[in-house]
Length: 246
Image (cartoon, rainbow, N blue to C red):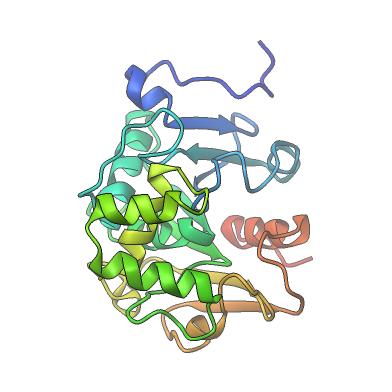
């Protein structure tokens, strides 16, 4: 089988195998990747880019997506620790973490891992704490964030499904982010560097909260992108690997 083929990880039990996929050179820098809400683990840095950049990307499929059972009562920290425990089962004891959009809060939560396995945390076009929802969020997003704070899970899922968004994980992502996170971003451990990449004109997720977050180093670029271009992923990987900027 080609080394470029994404394949199950035989060292894990069947449920965990389906949650993790790896791509990139076997000796690449390990990076745990949290996908966006309503997206899939394959959305994000391309396989070719990971090989080119020397990144061993570990794509984690969250509960409620694909064939992974939902965990409605799990917190951001619970999900992050579950992913990191699966990483540890592979014999990887140091890893950087990357989260895009709705995956950003999980990447931030990973910095709290008691085993101190996380070297760096990078977030891109990430959601910020939503209590209350930021005024520059799209109207529909603000509505669902507010609904997620007060509605029972079943009713909220039904409301979201009425708009065509039927992924259970998507509903649970919104509920976790809309409610208290269980940690303060500015209170994350000092030994884990945290950096954010965001476009100035992102219409899906506003950049303003990250401008005011002292704990996070912000790389703000012009444009209106929400899904990053290869140049942004390359910049992130340069930071993760401590390569000089291009």
